[in-house]
Image (tube, rainbow, N blue to C red; front, top):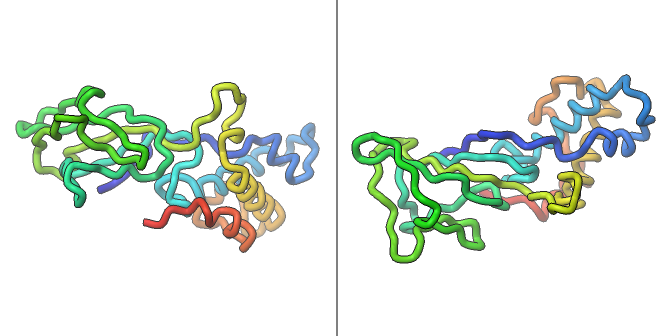
Length: 202
């Protein structure tokens, strides 16, 4: 089983919010690229398939690739990196190696983010191959239709943790430079305490 990011999420915090947290004048643009890089690094450190939380935060499109429809729980397939917004498509290679797409009425997603065949249907036979099954779906905290920004949908403790990590990177520039990657981001005990209730353990 593997999950591939098809469309990555936007940074969890916008630039103006980050600058306000850092007490940087909004009119001062000298450090904008630096601050944006820190926000992106902090977001990537916790979000999506490579993130510490083990869940999707910003809306993103993922693709779960499997060798077969059946799992350890028979016909059900757990969709990782919840919350799940919706399933975009379910494609598979049939016995002849031809790609097929299941219609939306042949499967359903339960409240526990489990994909299963619709009532009175079964998964089709698929070719034996590591990536024979490709389930594409959108995951993350979907913004309220009445809200203008993603951060209105992200739980406040997660947003606060990203701001704290951004602040730590900004204050300690010898360990945080433009191009910082998620693996370079250090988390304080306060950040871990904020994020711990949202962590999904594999």
